[in-house]
Length: 280
Image (cartoon, rainbow, N blue to C red; front, side, top):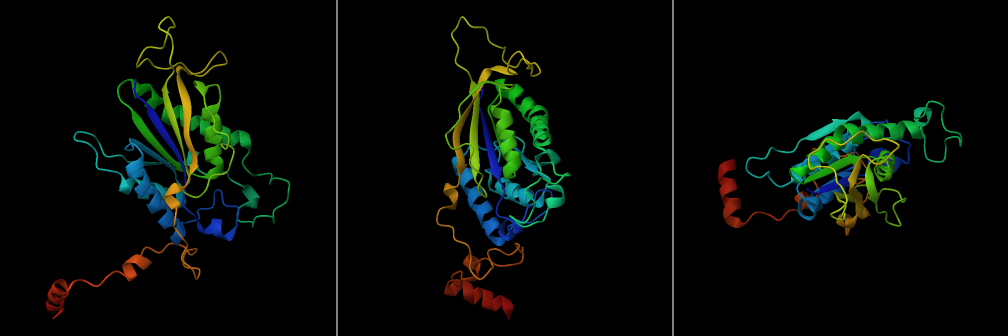
């Protein structure tokens, strides 16, 4: 049976992150620095992770932009294999803070807004994602391994992690000591789903056999275990500094040159001469 790698990835820095605003359902775009974070992440995953077979993302633009950047850096598919597509899902959106949306941190009342999304509602969304999207992938592990990358937001990722760690899905799960910490921008948590080692005398679910629905009598996949590889990994951001003067914190502008391209070395004399001839 194959192995499933799952990467839970938070989006890059957004404009509302910098402003210190509660932004769940608000469609805040990435900052210029957030785009650089996403590019660092994408380059890192392209070499340090298995090739993605599935990419899911929240349909909010800060997550979509990050997921698209990750997708662009992926190696080309093997012969006969389809290219991976980015699937946008509303179930992966961040918590809706209701009337508190757009308020600055510390300025909202201690009492949760009456129209804010509840913890149970977020858990329900996370469970629905596992049931509708991950379950078919896990059922197909008998044929081939898979690597799923999920780009979303801190609170919904935490809900998804709690759902995956619950006793309704896998026989067992490991947990790092820092798994309750918050997600950094482009920080990722890597999980592995693999067969649980059993003695030859113990029965196991047949390879490729459709799993039974989760119940109170046991986990949905009793022969599989969930393991943590790393939590909130941000090693790809080492050495990355935000551009001063407010440029790094501003909304990313597709037309804006990066400092690297702006200060790129001049072309060699022969190439420059050829370019001069073309301009005449």
